[in-house]
Image (tube, rainbow, N blue to C red; front, side, top):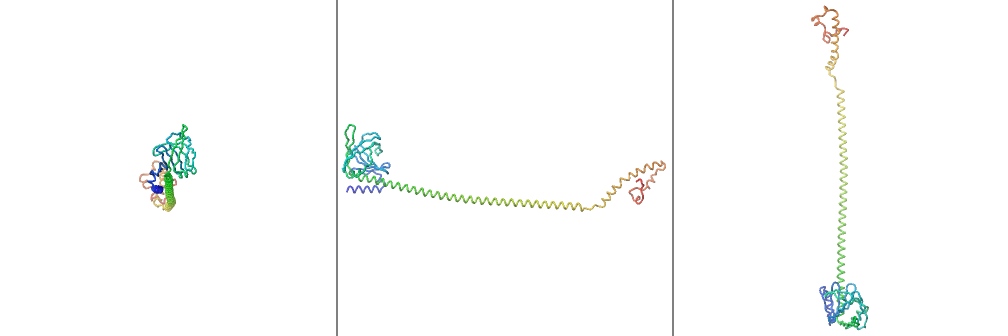
Length: 309
């Protein structure tokens, strides 16, 4: 009945994470969890302790009797069970417990040793002392199976919980990575589309600029051509106007008069000495001078002028 009650308590503790972290009594044994390890142990009169400490990878037995030891040194002990006695080589090392740090003698789990403990009602441990004597400790094994099973199941549950949590974390990271990849792909697609649109706008701007340049060149060439044609036409009109302008008759007569008038004073000057050579009596009077024909007047027209003229 007590074994059934212990098993029920073990199952309840494994099902309830809060209870699984609590110290639980199993007859002469107790189970507890501390800093990621599970431990099943029993005491002898508060002086010595024998137990099993497990983590996720392995379990190790230990013996603790309050005797100081050199860390890292080996110490032999003898364990007596219902299945027989065996010599065990232990190593001294400190251990952190809920009561503080203590020195323990650790040894690995041996083949069939756990079965021998399960079949024994009590075990004895002989520890050699420096004076050649042995310190004998006796431990009752009632409750060992339930305590060790609770430790093992608790660690399995924690391992499963940790693996589930790690799996959930992996899935979450994978989802996040996939989401980041999707967003990055979308961003890359948007960037590509933006680049294509920018390239299309650039090409359109270049094409528009090229069309505007060609149109400006054509317009400038057309304006230059029209200006040249207009200038050529005006020059042609000016030349035609210059060649087709008639000479006015009055201007022609004035030019003729101007060419004939300078010869008259010369004739008078020549005639004057001739008259003077005829003598002073033969000089003409003013009256006669008035009757003399004057060159260039109507009275001289049709008359012969002096040959000297």
